[in-house]
Length: 312
Image (cartoon, rainbow, N blue to C red; front, side):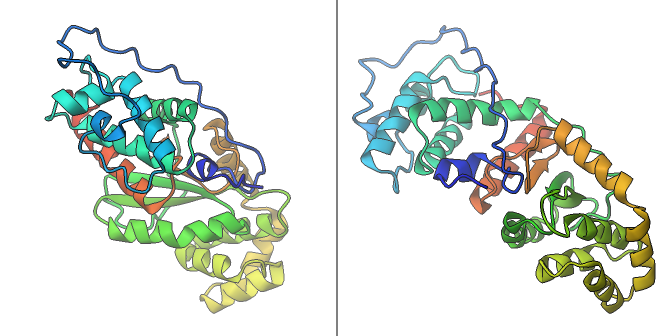
């Protein structure tokens, strides 16, 4: 089952498989050489978060959470490439694009309940993810939801019987529709063996894909779960204009099992532990909230446009 802490909601995509996601072991980026002058005077104290984090919205944080973010900012270097800590960059480098975003990221994690150690690990993991991209094959897994010409590809590994996938689906589809010219969504099956009818539903989804009924069947399966027996699946196929006998035959013969097994093996190689798991251009996402998706899309677009971060 999914852990219930707020931090887990942000950092764990693995829900139905019942295993925690692999820990991020990325080594923090080496701070730039300290060649630029430091701000004059003593640095602010973590006990004065507003001074340590000028211009950063700390509303919604408890005093202790604000202190943790200030401590983080006073100790960790900014990812813009300058030789300053995050706090120094906020105070003396007003043109920096990254410092305010890095601070916002730390605030988000702190609000979710991150400890000081969590903040360092999670922020480092977030930035490291841009250099660690899985190779995901979507050639047999179209059509995407949204505009096929949209530049950024989202790939979701999902299980029609997974309650977490069912809850995530509306928000994800709303995000895709709201950014139709920027992102497209590919659906890939990852049925959980312990879930009743997971395999039958996954096969029905792949059958529908090959009969130009993917997204209509996708919606129907999520809406009707857990009523996903073969008889029920055949009924859904009929209602969508498909051949129920052909679907029955495909499930009985295991026609789509190799494709589905290939999808699951690819997902495991990419590091997933359960469903739902979402990738953005091969980068596994940890924060699946609407704000989190919006935030990371903006970063992804900067990364793509500049082949890395804009150096300030």
